[in-house]
Amino acid sequence: MAGVAALRAEEEQPSGTGRARVGLCVLCGLPAAGKSTLARALRRRLPQRLGWACALLTYDELIPPEAFGALEAEVESTGQPPLPPRWKQSRRDLLQCLERVLRALVTGEPLSAPATGPRAWERFLGCCRGQGLLAPAGSHGEGRSWTPAATSGPLYLILDDNFYYQSMRHEVHQLAHSLGFCQLFLECPLECCLQRNRLRSHPLPDQTIYLMAEKIEMPDIKKNAWEQNSLILKSFDCTSEDNEQIINLLATALENPLKPNEENTEQKEADRAICAASAVHQADQTCRRIISQTMKDAKDKNILPSEMKSLAEELNKLKTEFLEDLRQGNNLKNQICTQNQYFDPVTSVISSFQHEATNALNKYIFK
Image (cartoon, rainbow, N blue to C red; front, top):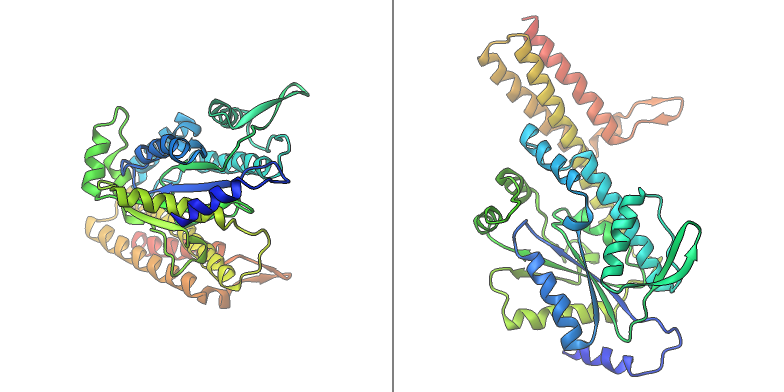
């Protein structure tokens, strides 16, 4: 507990800024892995045991219910991983709201509204006000303005969501300049998550959890320098030793806040790898939709079942080859140039795959 002791010693020293240290902890794992239970426990224990302020930002409460409805409909209709437009937009809005609140916490300045929908901002403000993060700073324009509430010790924001892609967590990490940042990944058997989920008042479809389990990316400390402050827990066996590890992780993150504009070649390479993975994922999703539409068109053209099977195999083989080229960067050699304007790799792959899928379909139609 040396990290906690060091923090307490520093807190006893007079501070010229008047602002407390701020930490950002990302909880991640499958639905029903136990994240919300842990988040609520941290919110109780941190103030009681260490005197730290703690606020809980639960994505299920901050994202509007209709976005989750779109999420379930997408999974049921396409069988694709759950990334419908409305859900993605809600997450982008949340990130913008979080960025404004974090900036205010670091600088002590009044909050300014982001360029999101007013409903998203009001939901976020309501959550922060309800947990004592904000204090009124008088009237401003059409309504009241808000400023960070004073705290006597460190403040931790706990983000409770699945965060199953590294890229999702990295987006939060990029907002954490001058803050402590850490991750808690709850590892729970798939069957246990499914059973717990079915007992909920509003359970997710099993298919959603199956798909997420296939795609989930655990923190990789060796590969990603930015994930060094991470802890993987067995959610069904959170022992007293686990509790000590969690407290030490939180304290270590506070002791080592992220430095803005820090030059880090290794991190830049990791960031590029994340962007590449995101590009492959984007291309994969679009290619899957192209395959789905092509198979529907083939069915409408009354192509024989045996030929439908052959077409599906051919399209999936093509998709695998195109995505591998994208991973390896081979497609960069074949980018189309028109008046010095280059297509980006993802657009190039999608366009080429659409062309090949159309040719494959026509081959069976005019056979």
